[in-house]
Amino acid sequence: MIGDTETIEEFLARHASDVEEAVRQAAATEIMPRFRQLAAHEIDQKSGPHDLVTDADRKAELYLTEVLPKLLPGSVVVGEEAVHADPDSYEAIQRDVPVWIVDPVDGTRQFVHGDPGFCTLVALAHHGIVRASWTFAPARDQLATAIRGQGAFLDGTRLYAGSPEPGRDLRVATSHPDYTTDAQKRALLGLWTDGVQSRPCGSAGLEYLAIARGELDATAFSWEAAWDHAAGILLVEEAGGAHLTRAGEPFRITGGNVLPFTAARDAATAGRVVELLSGGA
Image (tube, rainbow, N blue to C red):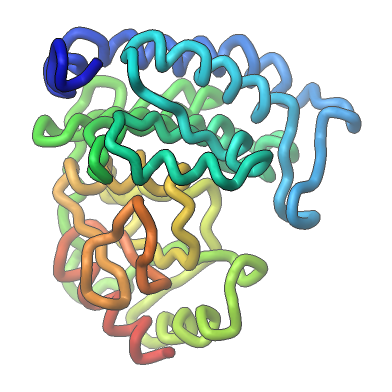
């Protein structure tokens, strides 16, 4: 139990590679055998036709829910599919215990359509602070990791987000209109301006990775489900990036954020995106 026998830092020093192995095994066992092999009965809708869940999502989350707490006794798992079944289970993020935040297949729509642009996201948080994260894109065999204060890495190579080139249009991935309220749509309209190239986002986890790699300048997201953002937020931070809500505050995985919010390659870009979002509201 953290606090009784070791710190989070000590746990990660000993077991970060074990978490990586668990993430890889979940994908190898439950996700990739179903990639481009899904039968119709293995796909369901949740809130609507754009909100899909598959047997791969459910079974990969069950695998990680069994394995991760064994690595860290006293920890709990908050997974997207478990929360869908029992919304009250999301409150564990607020508790004084280490929390594994899991999105078994981030980008389920892409997964269902045979597109390799999906990933498995795992973050370890304590007291509302993300301490470590794993972003695994199994169809691309890419693993990005971050430990707070120790940097961000892709397949062992250090990531640096850098800054956008002066004079070039900002490249921004935004929430799909299907997932935004009228007020959020008005805020996002602020990005439809000279000097910004915006497009709908794909897998949130892979968009964060693109920022950490310097391939995308920023995001503008209108929802705050922790499983979509916890891993990526730390990855961007550790690559030198920043994140801000429309209130000018860092994004909180515990919720209550003023939306939309942005993650960006640097603080100046985050501030610029927030100004544009506020101007469009």
